[in-house]
Structures are given as structure tokens and as C-alpha cells.
Length: 121
Image (cartoon, rainbow, N blue to C red):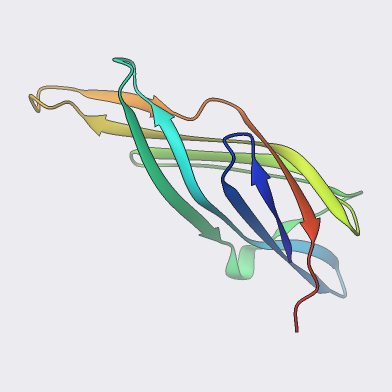
């Protein structure tokens, strides 16, 4: 497992699994992220992605994952070495305006992250 921080100062955790086929990202979680909306209001949310059987392969230390589903999008890419890793991520979320007449897109923009390997039992 890798633990670290995003450029917003929040916690990120990346769990890696190893099989005969190589190393895979099993899940990613971000404790909290601040998304900014077009009117400059902000939204804070935590989120996680579990990949189960469709784990994300790590090839030559690099991995990437992109998901766009209904009202949200998540993108992450980076490198995971044996002891540390780094990369970028972004999260976007469509939010209904207070008058319920439209939706606006709130986003973290491009964030960076760094992690260190943590041995778990």
C-alpha cells in the first residue's frame, strides 16, 4: 500500500496487488478534494475507486485510469516504484444550480500527488 498527499494537502491511498501477470492498482482513495465551480463556489468530497477484477496494470512503473460516468469524471496517472510514487489526478462533478434550471461543472483541476510505500500485515 502507498500513502501520501495531494497538492491540496489531503490524503491519498493507493493499494497495489501482485499476480503472476505483474503489479496492478487495486484501489485508489482520496480523503477529501476541493472542487471549484464556475461561480467560484467550492464543493468538498472524498472518493474512492475499487477496481476488483479489472485492476489497472502497472507497466514499467507507470499506470493510468480514466473514468467518465453519468455526472462525474476521474482521471489519475503516475508512476509507482518500489518505495515511492508520484503523478496527477483530477475529479469533475456536474452539480445542479440552486435554481434547479441548469447544471454546472465543478472540478479540482489538475492536482499532483506523491506517495510512499507503507508495509502492511
